[in-house]
Structures are given as C-alpha cells and as structure tokens.
Length: 204
Ligand code: PRP
Ligand code: URA
Image 1 (spheres, rainbow, N blue to C red):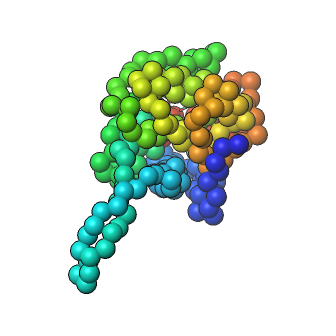
Image 2: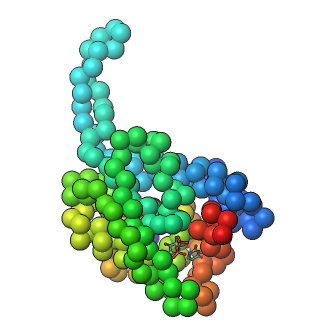
Image 3: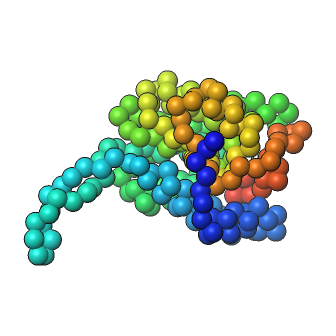
C-alpha cells in the first residue's frame, strides 16, 4: 500500500479540490496547500548531517539536511505541486518531464525531458493524479534511465489500478499520496476523483 497522508487539514483541502464548484484560483491555492503537506510527508526520512554551531550560549552539534534533493513534476498538472517543494527546499534541483495521455487510449507519450543530475540525489517525482499508472511508470523509467536510484512518487489522488501498475514495474519506488480512490471509469478517469486536474488548474 502507498503511504497515505493523514491529517484533517489534508482531508479538508482534498474535499475542496474534489468539489466541481471550486474555481481555478482557489483550486491553485488548494493544490499549493496540499502540496506543502505532501512535501513534508515525502521528505520526513531525508538523511541529515551533523554540523557544529555556536548558539548565543554554547557550542553544539546540530542536525542539517544531508544529501541533495531533486523534484521532477510531470507536466502539466505536476506544476501545481512544484512551488511547495521549492518553497520548503529552496536549493532543490528541478527537472521536468512532459507526458500526455491520449484521450482515446490513455496511453502516455513523452514530449519534453529536462533533468538535473539525478544520480546522487533523492528524487521526488510529483504528479497529482495516478490513474492507470502509465504516465508514472514512463516517468520512473526515464528517471532510472538518467541514473536515479532513490525515487519517491508523490501524488494527490491515486487509483488502485495505478498503484498496482507502479508497484509491479517499480517495486522499489515508494508512493506517497493523499487519497486512494475507488476505481477508474471507462475513460480511465479516477472515481470519485476530482476530474481533469490539469484542466481545473489551468482553466482550460
Ligand atoms: C494526467 C495526470 C497524470 C496522468 C495520469 O495528465 O496529471 O500525468 O494524467 O494518468 P495515468 O495514470 O492514466 O497515466 P494528462 O495526460 O491529462 O496531461 P496534463 O497534465 O497535461 O493535463
Ligand atoms: N488525469 C486526471 O487529471 N484525472 C483523472 O481522473 C485521471 C487522469
């Protein structure tokens, strides 16, 4: 099972995201807010180093963030979750993977790939929707082809079908999500879901 974000505020924000009457401006703000919570959840086991510092009163060994971090949103909807990561981790490296599902077949195709050095960094691949899992598997394939060995997949809403597909193809990649929904419909949309995340985020 994925790691599920448990927080009353996360449930509240998710409810507002699901509501079809939530306008784009509020949808963006809500995406940012739940993105912050997911970013904290996905990084709670980040390795730390020890630094010796002087407080105003004495010298102490204290914890600082250790290894490098990269965040890779899957375009376009993943952009709605990028800023929480760059706000919390200002020195994070950012890569982009452009993937789009075919409206008929739900098969993903790639149109953009710009990655930082992912070989020595924890990589957080972010995409709000995990439906069939086709896009996530393609993204993880590309990250591994670029040399990534320590990857987390961070989503807002996940379907059981997508979770199974990712687990089968990439059993080493933990999934952190805010919700596991019931199923996919005949058009591979998540039920109950929240609709097309990219369309609602960008008002298209
Ligand atoms: C959505 C979503 C995921 C993908 C999930 O993107 O952001 O990338 O669908 O579906 P899957 O698990 O069945 O692959 P979409 O292709 O609609 O593109 P967009 O982000 O540009 O709207
Ligand atoms: N992509 C979305 O934006 N929503 C879904 O329900 C499935 C894929």
